[in-house]
Each structure stands twice: as C-alpha cells, then as structure tokens.
Image (cartoon, helix red, strand yellow):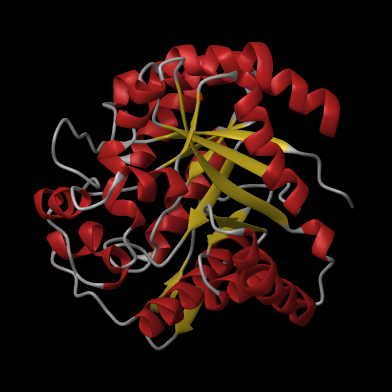
Length: 335
C-alpha cells in the first residue's frame, strides 16, 4: 500500500492561547490541511508572552469546531505525569466521539513538562523503556478486556476500558536518534521527526526505522513517515526571522538531556543562539515558491506526511497563503 501525501498544521500551545488556536484550526481545515498536530506541554519553551493550554481538552473543542480534519498530539509523553492507562482512556474517548479523526503522537518527553509536577527526570534509557512499556499498555487496553499487566514500571490489575474505539487509533512515535527510530519501526503506525541534515535521515534515522519495521514483519510502505517542518512566512524577511526567535532554545541539544524546567531559564539559554544557528532549524521564506521548494526537499527524501509548524508574524495570512499557493501545488504534483 502506497501512502498518499498528507499535509498537517501544528497548533502550538506554547505560543498561542487556546481560543486563538481554535480559530487557526478552523482556518487550517478550510485551507485544506489534512490534520492538526497539537503540542502537549505543561510548561512552554519560553516565558515572555507564552501560553500553555491543555492539549486533550483543546482537541475535543477543536474537533467540535471542525468537520473532518484529523487531530492528534505532537507529542504526548505517556510515561511520567500521565499514566499510560489514562492516556489510553482519554484517546479512546476522543476516538469514539470523533471516529476516524484521532491519532496519538508519543515520545520520551522533556523535563520542563515532568519535573514541575513532581516527577523525577530519568535517564534516556529508562525513558525509552518506559515508552515501550506504555505503548504496549495503551494498545492492550484499546483491544483487550480485563487487562492485567506487570511490567518493570507499570502495573494493571483487571483494567477494562468501557469506552473503546471501533477503529484502531494510529500511534506515531517521535524520534531524533536511532534508538527511538528503531522503536517507531517496531511498534509505531507512524514515525515523526524534525528537521535535520539529509545525512542524518539517510545514515541514522531511516536505517534504524527500517530495521524495526523488518523485525516487526511489516511492509515499510505501510509506515507513515512524518516530519515537522519549521517555517515562518512574511514578505518582510526580518519580521519573519524575529517571529521565530522565541523558539531559540529548542535547537540546543542539552535542553532535551538535562532537567531544565523553568521557562525563564530556558528563555535565557535561547538568547545565546544567533541568527545563523536559528536559520538552520527554521526556514524563513518570503514567497510561496520558497516554501514549496523547501517542503519538496522533504518529500523527495521520502516523507509521506509534512507537518507545517509555523511561527509567522501573521498566522492567518500564512494559512491563507498556503491555501492559495502551496497546498494546491503539492496536491496536484504529488497526489
């Protein structure tokens, strides 16, 4: 089965308050985006003018405001502040209410979402082990009744979901390195990653993903490869560049390794990032053609799902530009 190209839009809870994000979701569906991926955070990546609504509540409201667009998280950490059984219950309920429209993105998390609510920040190895165990628990609860489970980290005692979806809920596993790419191939319905140099995809991520797929006995063409493409659009280049400045700390690798959880401290580290570093992760484009060419790079690399993560000076104008120019071109060229 060859997957058709999908184009999603990110609802960034860290950047915008939930009511404004609802408006963006309505505009994104009207524009022709296939899905809304919403961040699932307790703390944002910065402090100044930040927001941080609760993703699951927002998803239900967004599903009510829209008609058919798919909704999911990019991504939920189902291992620390959330018990995996509660994640299973929450997404099963959403899927019953909005059949065929809900997906779940999962990852190993960030300290800023877990430490503030009293969780310890485990080693990377433990977080991976917890994630694998959590995914198995979630799938068991979606498909089996009266589940008992004794793992290294989690226990179920005759747990039963009385509200369960009739259709499977796709699970996307987020990965930036080989360990989680392998897990995505082994257990995921989809694989989600972020911008890297081409060599990192070719030499690290894709081989690990394919190894996991082979070991699971599945067809590589059945696994959706999704990438978040970070963009900013304005005809004024400097305005577009300044609009992504708030995300500067996200390009620092140590932010994901160490238990740094205060948004004020995170923002201070971001001030150490220069414009040239920022432009390596965020695409700054002043015309539709520039955005099209940038997205095509990922399509040619083999991604089947492009998730537009925009931090533009005017998000509604950016969505309209994609509606008028970018999406029609991509649909006609790659469908």
